Image 1: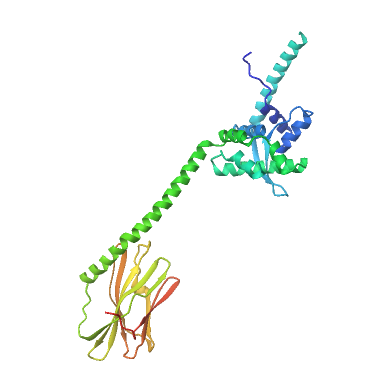
Image 2 (image 1 turned 180 degrees about the horizontal axis):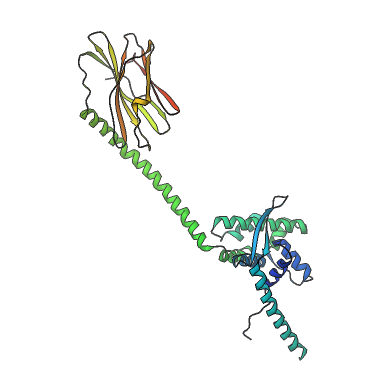
Length: 106
Length: 238
């Protein structure tokens, strides 16, 4: 089975950003909440993924200073990011269907 | 590990400083958000952020390493240039001073001022200096000469240090006046003036009354005004 694993952290992050712009901590919280505590992402995983997505221009970032003086970086998905997310979603559904079919016949 | 150590470790491999600062601020805000939301103390919150060294490796790959190398190289070049300039300044001082003295001797030899008719000459202590941005004027030598008709004149050899300012001072414009304790001096002459690569020389003369105790020469250029005070009552040591 040489096919690449389609379910990636970057896909999950892009999916979360599809709805609205978010900052790092918010992404971790949202992922935890929506996956009902299945995906508890570490900062060491999230930030390389976010910065990698930014480098590939799949997301853009803007800095904003909060009332408490914190400099947050808000990430927004780009048009290119939406297209890549769409492809990843399709790959994931194909993969998921295949696995489900195999498990059903087991 | 405290908060600062964690942030230092997580960002230390990002060589490009603006990137490093931005990432550090982002991680710091994350840590604060985490502490605020979870109520954890600093140490526990920092521990829950994971291994900073592993994060540092990942971030260093993503954050423009070539910009980082160029940034470091530019810092080295900048430091090298600063050291070079300091050395140059020291060398210039060491080389220019003897050259300057040589220039003075040569200048005096090549363009002597003819003083005829003086009955008596008296050396006045010199060495006083006035300075302003980019220019220093020093009275190297002052001689009071008395003439047969009872008049007397003070001759002052000036050394004008140009510093890094290469264009010579225009003495005709800069020398704005002269006076003694007896009043303004109406007659003042630039006997000679010459500028070479690193120095400018001039010899000025002013007519001084018999009872004069001091002479003041006024210089000004642009916004600055300075006065060179020469005490005539003292006699230079032979």
